[in-house]
Length: 175
Image (cartoon, rainbow, N blue to C red; front, top):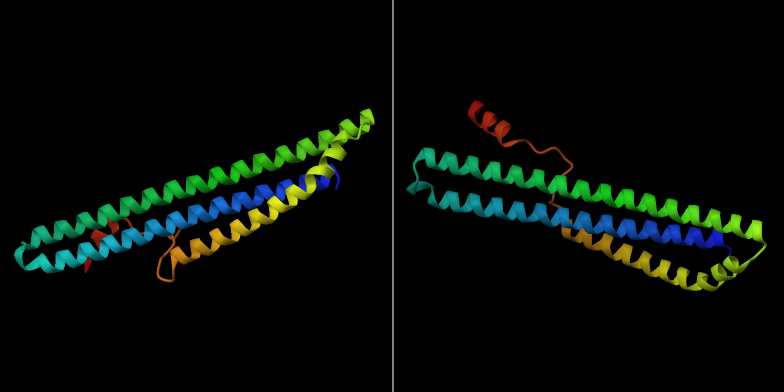
């Protein structure tokens, strides 16, 4: 295996780790959405049970507060996960560029000096790199399965625009 082929394996490995990180971020996002959904259900159930003891204004304020808290939580979840996705994307991009640059420099070094030590090193490390790449692909698949299992069927994605607390209150007043 030449240094170029080793660099291809290394790039694949980097991409696999990037996809694994994205899967973990998606699992975090889906879990956060699920938590908010459960909290909203509990809040609404508690509010429904205590409504006879509350004045109309207190019940209205409690509902508005719950909507505001959920909206802020979803915005925070969206910002953090989107930011993490961008960081992972940039890290993968930089790491792959570094591998490509190292492979190009190694080839240039061998061409100029006639020393093939780097090619020999690439051949020696290739089996380990391939094994690691296969392991990383399995981990990537497991994290993808985990993320979809956490998301389930009923969880919406944060990327869908969620109405703000203010627009929800305006809609409620209009109705």
